[in-house]
Length: 446
Image (cartoon, rainbow, N blue to C red; front, side):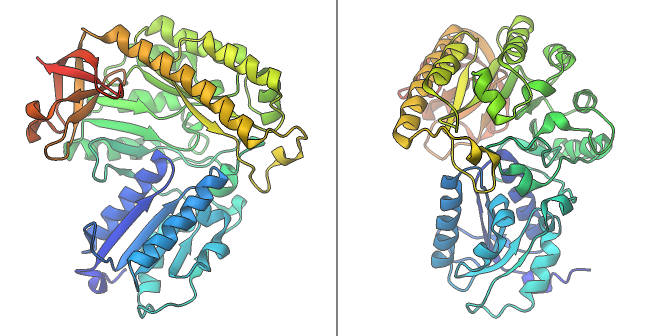
């Protein structure tokens, strides 16, 4: 039993780096602390507790983690600083040695974050002292931290899976998150029902490799989708990311006619060159990827399809990048998430001899981002003048309100039209022209 009396009236700040999965976990930790009597500190207030959930997907992410930790320590002197997440797992001792850090928890230990925090808090005197770290080897990461939270956002994020068994040559995530594991469908349904009771209307399914759902329980991701689709009160579900080889054709067909699963897919490609995919140890080729994209657009023509692409990885010779660009150009994709390859210690990609310099990585990224802008602009333009249903999200007072259509078109409601009551409401609109920076379509309420 944790004694929460010493936490009553304390304040906390939270910082999340990286993915939606990290955001979901941080929101859950914040809720746990709130239930213990800890209040979230205001922006300019010095906090008693700082929790930083880290990312380690690239070298840049590692550097940003260290910057955030140092800044939080500087802005919140004598605060108890907890660091968890992927960087904390991979570099536990190094993080613990950063001045101001009190407690570092790896991927297995963060499931018991409140217990670790409580134990260490009772010994904390508010003065600088050596941080302690707790982490285990990858094969020993077996715990699953449930999470279904929205934090200060409108949409809920439901963690349905953690870990990965793929070990792609460029990636450290399996080392940081452990092997693939998941809770059972019944527990996830209960969490989603609770979100509905709290007034939630949209839930995003998150995880590291969510198409691998069921490895622990013997269920399937399609089974999960069908079960969630029946939950009353939740109007929308979105699937954050699915590996191409794990997208069952039956799943695509089911989502096309489901009650609540939106016509919105996010699918990592990484490279449009079969030679590079082999070097990456990806489990599909361009033919399979093209089949999945074309099947989605055939069954659901208005579907939004986002795609991850990595540029400049080891072995990506100029012709392979051209093959990648040309392949992507042929597909009905809506948007690209483009990121340059980053050398990660301990990955097998380091044994691949051909190296792309940073200048060339930037050039390739810029070329693909231009293509992405063209694709997104074309998709948005096709929908101008149509009616749509939009879930609006809370706006800053005096600012425009934004939201998303079923197929993930971002819309903007002018400040003159905004009412606080529109937050978390699904409303009928007519889609107008682009806003000033072309990041959204202006809308007229119907």
